[in-house]
Every structure is written in C-alpha cells, then in structure tokens.
Length: 108
Length: 116
Image (cartoon, rainbow over all chains, first blue to last red; front, side, top):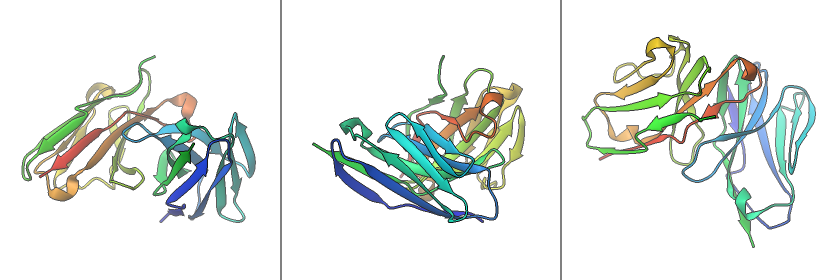
C-alpha cells in the first residue's frame, strides 16, 4: 500500500515563507503532486515533481527527493488568499493517493 | 472553457434513503474519477473510468454504491441505501491526454452529502 504524512496545521503571517513537508511510503510511483483546496472548494492542481529536485511556479515551489521518500511545498510571500488546505499526492498509473492535508492559516 | 460540473452541491437525506450525484467532466477528457473526501481528510478514489469503461473500481463499496458513465461523457454515482458513515463530499475529477502522467486532475466543487 501507500501512505503519506504531512503536518495537520501551519500558521504564519503575511509575507512569510512556509514549508509543508510530505513523507511517504510506497513500492513505486511516477511522481508527487500538490493540490490546494479552499474551504468548500475544489482541489486545484499546483505542481508535479516526476524527478528529484525543485520545481518553481511563481510564489510556490515543490521539491522531491526519492532517496529520502520526502517532498515539500514551499509557499513564499504569503498572502491572505493562501489560507487553504494543501495536499500532497502520490501519482501512480493515473491514480492519485492523497495525504490528509495541511491547513495553512495566514494571519495579518 | 467550462470546468467539471457537479450536482447537487448539497444533499441531506435520512439513512436508508437512496441518493445520486451527477458529474459533467471537461469536454474531451476521457478519464473520469469519483473521489470521496471525509472531513479533515484527503480525497480517496472510489472509481476511475476510461471513456465508458470502469478500469479501477477496487475501492468502490459495491454492496451499496454504483456508478455509470453512459456514452463516455457524464457520470452518475449512486448510493442505495445510504448509511450515516456515507456523509462526506463526493468529488468528481477528469483528465485528458495532455495531463497524462502529469499528476494533474481537474476537480469539481463536489457534492456534500449529509446522512441523518
């Protein structure tokens, strides 16, 4: 089977940097995705790492290390609109297996 | 371009009653997914369709859940009879060839089911 672990909550102030870690256990996978979900909304795709290393998309970056079974999502220059839940997900043959999510609260 | 459309957004029923959810995926997307999301948890896959064929329904509780995707476009997920533990958000997602192996799915806003 597959399992993912992420912190349940993170709180930070506007303008700060937040790193959400994701550790996983799996026998094999294609890559690691990250999704954002605002309360009551649809999960929205943020990024995908198929290879080890850093992927940067605007204020958000994602990292993967297969040797460490570890990835993270980095949120920079936090804004109030970034308050949401963030999920890491293992991608395997069209199937996504999601972690339980990290709730990020941005304070003024 | 329209996104994934789901209805109803909210449904409240009593236990043992039936309920159905409808999903219209993004035009041209051959792959359709139904996920269930319990409060405070990540989405869990129930069933995946490639066109009209259910290619992965291993997580679908087949004693009470059923799904169909007629003509390979819209899909319906049904629960009969509903139990208290079925209270959750039912999410539909779709993807196309361009998203193959990218980890990108397009989700609808979900149908929130409350079973009393």
